[in-house]
Image 1: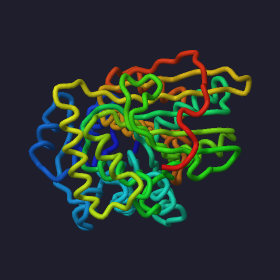
Image 2 (image 1 turned 180 degrees about the vertical axis):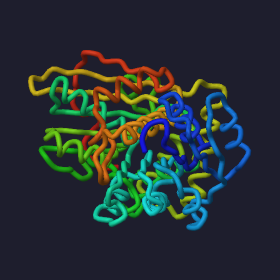
Image 3 (image 1 turned 30 degrees about the horizontal axis):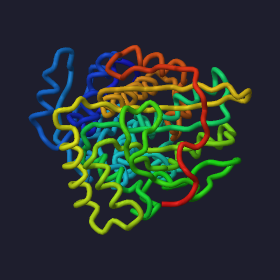
Image 4 (image 1 turned 135 degrees about the vertical axis):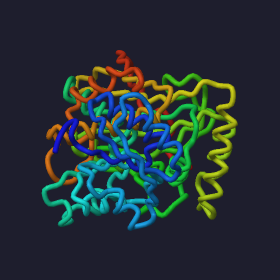
Length: 376
């Protein structure tokens, strides 16, 4: 079943990512929705919005029978819940076992690897990394590569916005020395050099002003698995990725935690959420993704994505990926979103809605590494 007739189940539907995804699904012509989450009243409020043809179901994603009941009868399940390091493939397996296709706004390589070769995938489609980061963060460089060619990439991502429970855990696990590397989706302090990952090539630094960011912040090198895949696939000579944290309290906390094991992840996540809330008090939230690129002729360009709400942007990318699956534009099997979405078509459709954010392209110098080589 495709298009408007398909029943799409959204797990985490009333959350920071799920609610924008639900609204964008309606915009894209998919009103038949099953909204799932822990708290019934926010789900019912979302279902009462204009244009809805939604049912609401309380679902506990840590309970096998609850999750199976939610997925039963769905044509596709969109997972907007987290944290991704804790859920891994739980929702995916329930969706596929129910005969539904699957889209995950995060998931990334652990979920793709877990599903590869699964008999549950026979005749089905599963797409992971269908958010702002990962997802759009690789789709935009692929669009640049298709338009102009691409040999070097340097990215800075971050801003000043609320920090959800799921985001806090995933962010803390990206700090140098903070986690079992099997639990995270990249390598702290690494960069891509000459066709391979170079460990500890960069260092984290505080009070650094990243390109196009309004104020100095804590700048954290983190070679994501997505950037590693992108660099290998496009044969990039150089790629660097930096997470940027601007709030003073968040910067202080992250700087203090970087370089040592996290004895209490839940406690640190709660502290980070409090710090982010205090940093944001009385200020306008924003999120920036700045991509500095160079082609084989040395021509340099900069893409700047700005959004007032990175979670909403993630919801839009997830909803768009659902749309493309239901329209039959994604092949069977398990994929990363940026590998199978059409870059030009997808970016055009996403930014036609101002809620996704704004995207600007500039001619600009690629000044080399933004930070000294070395280790924290």
